[in-house]
Amino acid sequence: MKRAFLASVLLAGCSAEPAITIDQSGQYAADVHVQSTPSGIDCGGGASACTAEFSSGTTVHLTWTQGSGVPATWFCGIPDCPSTTSSGCDVPMNADVTLLVGCTEGP
Image (cartoon, rainbow, N blue to C red; front, side, top):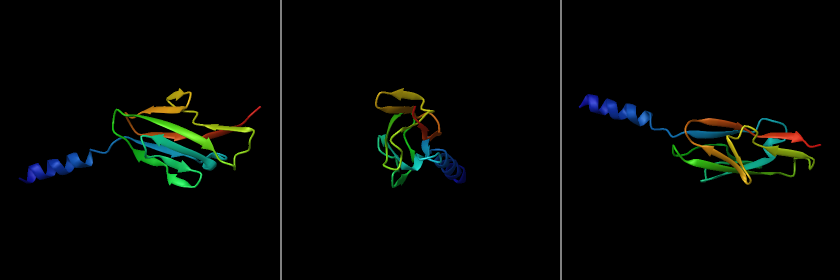
């Protein structure tokens, strides 16, 4: 009985799903609003859900919009995105990942 209980406790501790963390530590990055589909990430621009777990094997689509605090001549995005699409960033959820929001001055 004790072994079965211990095994179930140990397995319960291993059931965490992989997570995405959005790092907004760069210049102007905190004024970039990042959202995910499926929902979970809603980060920046006043929102604070910058880490979320997703089911293993799921592909999470991230989109972002620049806030008014980012100069019009700057471009912001997620430079380390594993798969850039025309509408954002696709992240396959196989392991935990941290993605930095980066902003750079345009030409």
